[in-house]
Each structure stands twice: as structure tokens, then as C-alpha cells.
Image 1 (tube, one colour):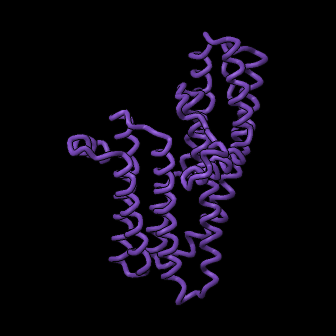
Image 2 (image 1 turned 60 degrees about the horizontal axis):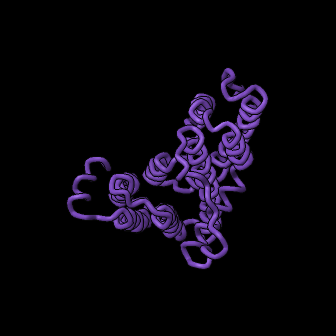
Image 3 (image 1 turned 90 degrees about the vertical axis):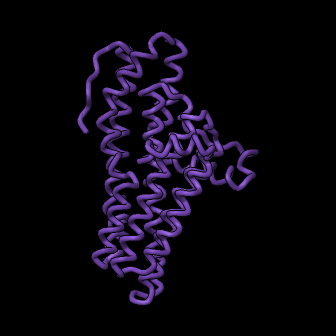
Length: 276
């Protein structure tokens, strides 16, 4: 759907940032719709509005690449819009649940939101690492805003998000540094290194897809439709957190094995996939 909208956006001169903000607007209205749970019509409206946000969320990046309008500010804005969408929906659900379950529900929602933020940061960090070392997309390298840049609101948010990613990336930071050093000594091996990284980590990245926002959107809809949004928040806190920790552990084990292979056996050595 996002791809179908691109020609229209280009023709009308729509900027990627405007697309991001339009998606956020859909998310805010979705939050209002979900505040009327358990009314089925409102639940469906919230779901459709979140689908519209997904379309815009996919279109902004595609439009930026198509029009060569990529920027660090645009990346930060895109992330902010994504978070605001889920914050709005979580608040909407909390508003709907408060009359029945009391104000303690806000603590549960806040904890679920914190877990969600950490899981999403880890998921995005692993994707960025894969893009850099699997495909050579250096623009995707993880950056933490400098103290000077962090003085602005967007810079501060970028800095905090980047620090969270660093904390959750595990061996990823070490891997990035050592592979960069390796390429400095053997620049001609870049293509082979990228190929080996893809072969080793493609299965891991596919596992991380369980943390993508698509499943959360569907989960929110199904739990809300069943009249049990609390079930979604408990799933976020308990199940998805456990899965996230497991994925980080498996990723760290495989990163350690990969570094051993490419540093001891050489970049052109055979690919040996470790368990997990």
C-alpha cells in the first residue's frame, strides 16, 4: 500500500516528514478510538487507524530514499512518531480500563510501555547492525547524539534512544568495532565479509521480527475486541520481555562465534552456523 502512494506523494510534493506526522495523527486518533473499549465499532476504528499509521510509517522512509531527502532529523522524527502512536493507544486503553480496574492500571500500562520501548530499541539495533554488516549500508550505523546535539529536544531524545540501543545491543558494539578494524587491514574482503554475515545472521534477524510493531497492532486489536486489554499488557511485560532476553542471549552467542571465525580462521573461511 505504501508503495502505491509514493507516486502521489512525489507528484504533490509531500515531504517524508509530513508523511511521518500524518501517520502520527492516525495514531493519535487511534488512541482516542481505543479509549472507547470494549465497543466493537470503536475497536475496529482504532485498528484501521493503526493500519493507516503502518502505511505512512512505511511510506516515509521509502519516499525519503526515492527523493534523496534522508536526514538524521527525519530518522529521529520517524521514531518519535512511532512511539507517540503507541503511547496514545496505551493511554486510550488505560482510560477505558480505569473505571473498571482503578488507577493501578496506569502503573501496569507504564511498565508495559517501558518494556515495549526497550524491546523496540533492541529490535531496531539488531536490524541496523545487520544492514551495516550484511549489506554494507553504513548510513544505518548506530549513532549516539553528541552532547552538543543533545541540547535540543530531538537531539536529547535521539541521545537517550541511542544509549538504550547501546545498552541492549550486547556484543553488537564490540562486533562493529572489531569488524571495522578488520576491514581497515583487509579492505578487499568487504564483499566476502558481508556475505558471511548475511549467511550467519539472516535466521537471527528473522526471529527478531516477532518484536515488530505489526504483531503488537494485531495483538492490541484482538485483546481489545475480546474485552481484555489487560491481557495484551501482561503479554508485553512477561512474554515479549522473556523472548527479547532470549533473542539477545542467542545473538550474543552467535556474534562471539562469528568474531572468532573471521579473526582466527579468516574472512574467506567456511561459514559455520552455531546453534540458536
